[in-house]
Length: 162
Figure (cartoon, one colour):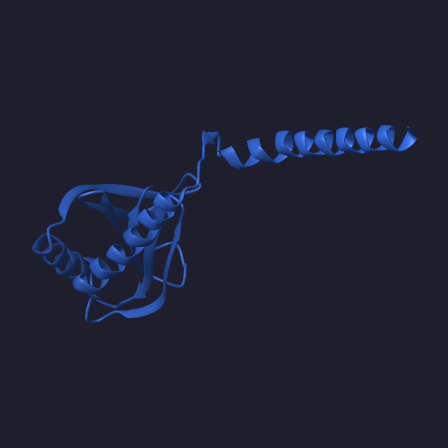
């Protein structure tokens, strides 16, 4: 009689533990960043393919010939992908802009806008960003302002899902 009671009690305790764990961990997984986040193989595969395509675009456009690449990285999450690189060049910004504008337009990218850059609300003293778009992908070229020493004077990123 006691063994039946113990077995039933043990099952009940296990069920309660499972339910509590589901109520704790399921919402954390489903609602990241205040949005419903359902990771599926489809989204992950889509992000992997987007990262591959962004790397292809990065290589097609190439690097400005008189620039040194400081750092290049590539990554993806379930619904985002990013390829970015940071450069140093002694060339005038106008020459760098001309190179990238020609290469991007030649490869099907469309110019969207030019925006002034700020760092925590501070004017970057001529820092600005150029944005291009192609299908669901974005390309940003950021030029650091003269006041700031980031270790690079321009950066380029190709993104999907941001």
